[in-house]
Length: 398
Image (cartoon, rainbow, N blue to C red; front, side, top):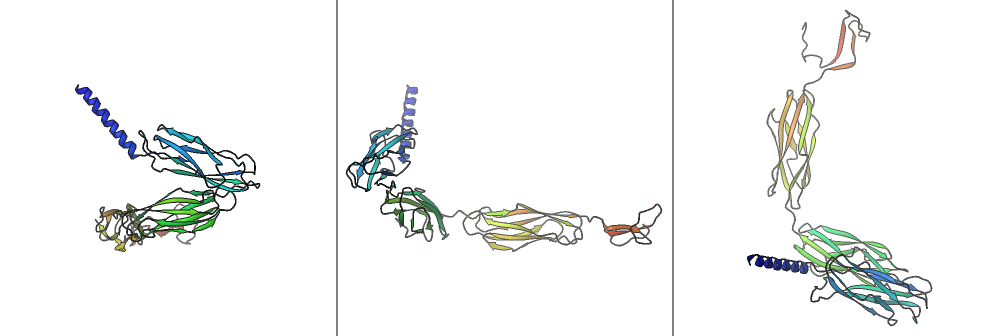
């Protein structure tokens, strides 16, 4: 009995979890197109158009309702109802128009796809979906203009307190015939007029930029919409939803490049070339930093400039090898910032001082009497010209 009870409890828990997951992820109606342009000659047969109706792997029952704004009942769709079982499924909607008795002109209609809740399936989360249909009865064979807007929605993100603007481009295209003269209006539900457009109107294919300004917005999610209108278009009104998430800034973080620095010098030679250390803010808050240099041997041969800064900065590291003998010397650069979690950050510095190498002049071996570069013979006295060929102070008879 204990085993059966365990099995029953496990099954009930699984059913509850499945039901919760189903309600948390509602089915979504997807259409390959939200508008259809049909062109037919007066008295001719209108071609059948198809639009695919799909599901996001959740079951739902759907219906399609047809409405026209003029010309009678010239629009139909088949099938006009159906159901999805929960797999990735697609149904072809066949959209037909009858031009019988219609004079030359443009006629408009809609097909509304709904998925109401039933006893076994929840309501789809974005119902209804509307397919706008334009029927052009014309001898020219030219369809009515129609909107094609990409993307279908915008999701922008900003950081509180930065006063930055976040932008995204929108492509508007005339998917039909004729001329599409459109205008766009931005509206917001809360937070003031944080959404703007440029340009706000155009003809046929155009690109506009939607900009969301953080300004003084508090942390939170803000919604708005861009409404496109075009008189005479198949889908004369197109609404593009916009979401603007304003979040708190990420804490500042010290990022140093490179992670280590090496200098090479020759004993007695000038200072080796300086090297840059780049300081950047890996977060989004205010970063005020300070730099210190430390050496472990050889005296204070390492310096850094500037010693402090804000935000991104370049610190110049210099090594003074004068007076140092051959060998390897170690040092360290420390960058610290108040209120930063990964402070301080250290960069190891190595200075290698090499012994000076002998150097012969281009014509460095010559006859000691004539100073001419003649071939050297046995027993000949020669003179050598170059640098670092012996001790700095000459030594005779050694």
